[in-house]
Length: 151
Image (cartoon, rainbow, N blue to C red):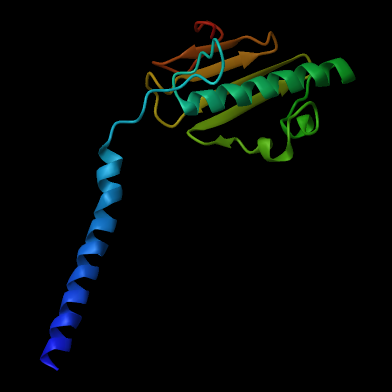
């Protein structure tokens, strides 16, 4: 009986050590530095995966607006109007885009789109675009038409 008790205690100890190791591993992994950003295509202006996603969203909106304007003779005044225009889908109407929040203001003769990060830094710049189709970026404040153009 004593041998079974010792074996049982040994099993409990092993499981406890394994559980503690499993729980503490993610904390150690979270402290590891993030790998350097890998550009998604030649000339990719993004500084992070979050920026790449924000810029891709902006390009889809800009193309959808261009197509919408060509088809109807004016720009969409809401993101919902852009659904099925180009590759703009219904789920893209949601302004929460990962680390970014989209803001859209449309009029029949123009529109303005901004992407604002949750935390503004060198890897999470703010972006701005309007009906000229040029995307502007700023890493210190909300981007405007006066901010540098993303190349």
